[in-house]
Image (cartoon, rainbow, N blue to C red):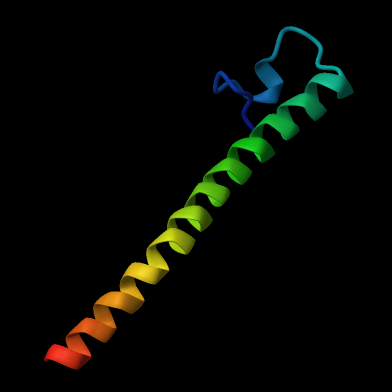
Length: 62
């Protein structure tokens, strides 16, 4: 059963929800997921040159 932000089920909600508030909540959750994904991608992109340099160093000197 779906929960709201406070952990309540839809059956226990006392106030009516509007389509606007539902959409706003969906956008908020999507934005949080996007920011996490973007920060992971940025970390991956910035770390790749260091991995390449380390591999090359160990191949030449190992």
